[in-house]
Image (cartoon, rainbow, N blue to C red; front, side, top):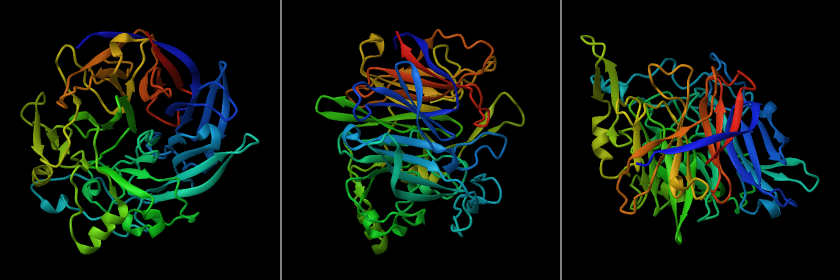
Length: 470
């Protein structure tokens, strides 16, 4: 693939960890503004080089960083209604203050193929054995310029601290629906196999019809679709399952249809980017009816990313060091039967990149943090590509830490494609630079990169947002 070089132009610095970067036109305004949501609960926008606060919900956010500062909770999703300019509606997904629980398992999870009972755990006593509660809310920008909460769409009980998704709310230009991308609930290896269970909300891509008013302002806190009141079930369709953890969904116009891009964060082996055009979402009411009848719903055209049986293009593996040779790894297929069951039902990735890759033109990654199509002409070599970011390059000599920017191209025959690093010229000096988010403007002609100087959300004011330029 072609070697691409870009520059990083700082837009704003000394902010908290930026989780969402997207643009919108404020009601009564004439120009697109860049909005930045931080994990701790602030939303800023940039106008004429000045940073202004749009909303501050820090008091609504769960206390972050209890175990050494690393956290995957907080303000995770921000989306503006397609008619935001006229109706002022926007949507938030965040982890709620005061909802800290003990977690779903007393100790870590280690699947052992030699001990089948470790492979099929059940999440029991969910009302008390959970880690925290996430909420999805509708807000409105009032005529006086003050945002106000209108209603709660979903309250989700989560089993573990991690895998809650990031950049988790986006509107579909095809259906006009709000799309919620939610991870498998966390730990590692999806202990309860939530991502493949049709009744579980975790590990799915869900469409929410926000045009339907359920007249339920405080929905119950749930983990399964069948626990939702019927009026809420009727607003939901499931687009995909088999998600491990996900940095959002993005849409690229291609003639008269849209290519959808989804990244699935890997376990120990590989990070994956999927693309699809056609899909057949299943209404939640149908899923619930099928569950009551103990039958399988029609899943023709339903998207399945394969987790937990598959990690991208590979059967999910447990990786252990070889006792005889510390330079080698032993890889054991963790869930052989599940890999077989989902082998023909799953979507193959557009591209994978590995956590360990010795090839000279490749890189070892840590975790996928953003996937966006680029439709601009400013960087001609990237036009029509899908660009992605990884948190931190894995190389023995890599100190201080640097994230990775890379790209792939969609093939018209639907086959997997290669990927290549995008070289950047910015000098971060001795500071660590974790690439934590990737965003774009409304017509996808500009790309924005969120960088943080630490892995700890409690290390404040170490964030910078850049525009990626030629």
